[in-house]
Image 1 (tube, helix red, strand yellow):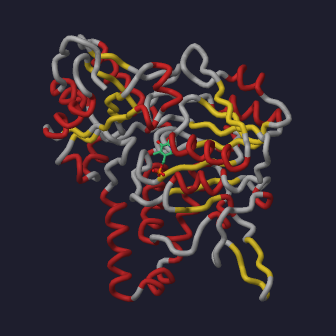
Image 2: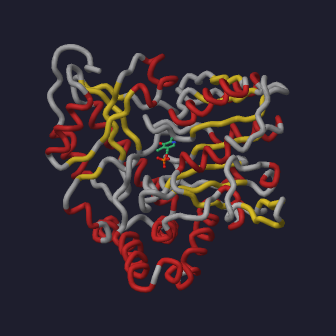
Length: 398
Ligand SMILES: *Cc1c(COP(=O)(O)O)cnc(C)c1O
């Protein structure tokens, strides 16, 4: 495994000159070549016309599917490119033919938008949403999951890495349970893709959603869905248009057979091409090398935070990733993030209403989230540590 040349990747990242960007779980700084690619395509649209630019750049557009397929160990026909991870996940989830009494098994760390979709479908179709308990490390408890399977379970839907902490759920062990039970498995890989190697065969998921702008460092407004060829033709997308289907006679249509049945026609082609460039960039560095560096930087950050009086760390899990969450006694997390921003240090805040099943049992209202990427440095971590306020009496304020 070749180590990451930090000097080079920083040279190729314009934003590192301006900010210590520790908000990579929000939206990472893109490499210069991703931005150049997007801008070049917009310029081409300006100069020769949007449809003409698309046809001139069709190979680059198609390349994005090959790049994502390589990233995930999938086939190019298994990939849909859409505007974000939520829409990718929704297209999968709302494709399932729900009937009253069906069960979904999910985890405490589930993303808020997914939970809202479960609740809506429970109201509309009478499905049951069962949250699998955590194990002693705060991960989904795989034995509990296994014991909860029965013939009403239609779907296991899990968030691999939550937005609100360093936890990594045991995705492949969950895949093994899904496979043995013959239950569909939808993995929200939004925070894991781009920071660690992912292989859909190894994980054993049928469906996987991801976004462009987070650890993949792609353009905003891009996301993707992997759909296994085994189940693709059984899933009828909730929306169809003239791209997802063909109007075959005045009274009939035929849905496409590849995963692009989950796409829609109009999209940002500049973004789509830029996403492919971002994926190539990650693949060139190597996902093992990326994981090694982000894990090491995050562990170093946690170690330094642990040494500070009045600072509480909130990351769970046995294996912890690039997302670091903490509170400082007597300080509001939003105030901390604002003060850091004024110093040119970007972090974000995770609040309870984006993680109710996770935060409420732990009595957490909000936490500061510092998420590192491979282009961050120990010096930037040092800047964050020095800029934190001294603890004040009392617990962290909501
Ligand atoms: C950010 C995030 C999403 C949503 O991604 P979008 O691209 O904003 O739709 C979904 N799941 C998790 C775990 C996330 O962190």
